[in-house]
Image (cartoon, rainbow, N blue to C red; front, side, top):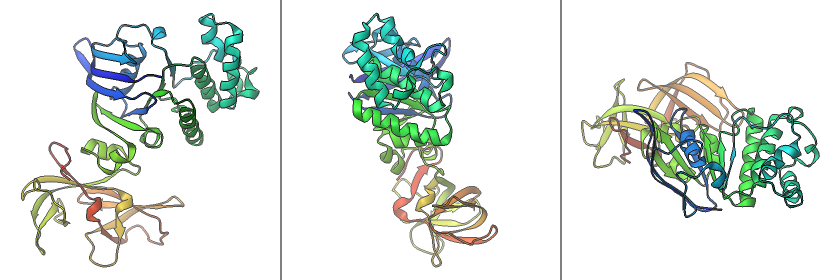
Length: 360
């Protein structure tokens, strides 16, 4: 196992810089997820750690060794790809044994490791099969088995579940996390799926446009996003937003946010920076909004209703933006009806509209 230190890492293709000065420390045995939209630089960053992309600048340390110019085979890492990268003409056993054979290890030394990995990954009954006789989830387990048998200091996962259906993704998320808890290796995991990031990571690194937006434990980022990008990216359904201008409340003391449609939302916990005339974006998560019958903060005409079984999602417009309200109560409400809503002050997020930075 090994800690990983990235200091000022950047990547440039000609005159175009795609990764900008990444500083990140990953502890020995930590499971860190790099998450962000397609094209944000997360896979490029992982490939630099793996040695599959040249580092344009900065320093990479794996353990105590500077790894900038080490070839991949000398970095003591194993990588699991989105496409599985299995040899179609080799059996499951031979696919898992491929690395040890290439390194000219004695079969007596690696056979027990393969049997242990197969048992751990529920592949014991499939060792003689070819990859084409396996399901997608089983193929991904073979790829993981090949990585485990190498006994690396560092596991790298590059969007390994993207090709699986929804049910298999949930199952494989659990299996990868359980594997990490047993082996306690350092893991860097890349995904664009924020649900994967939230459910698997010890810490999440949110990336956008080649830069780190925020680093923290999943619930820290969920409960206190530092900017509008992180707030909108994490959470499903996404956080609701309403842009407006801070004004003195028309009917009560204190401040309010005046929305584009002229309605106002009271700001009970406005920070000192939210002065009259400031352009502010209010955010609140769908599950934190309460439906009430008296003293509402805002009303919404329901346009779409989505029952999911455990929850019901109500969609409508507030301040010109589409909002979602999540309720665990089943309702006979119909599209076109109005619902009165309360926005608990403890769950309101305020951001500077122009910079996107958090105010409170």
